Image (cartoon, rainbow, N blue to C red):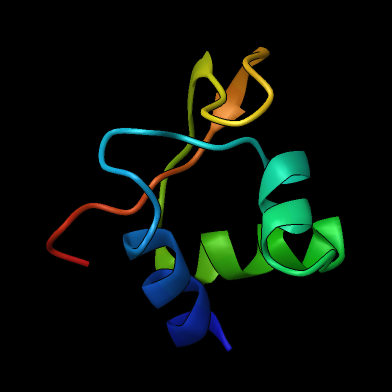
Length: 67
């Protein structure tokens, strides 16, 4: 399932980070804990910034093109 999340993140617009709340909504209303676990498993490190969906300043995650 973490490979599916990696592919999903890679398909989102370049240079946009998304908060966990929005990732759960975008990825079919998955559970926040599920997304958080997959993000940790993949090794994606969050950073504080504006979410590409809701625009709030919080911890966001994005895939790099090499992932």
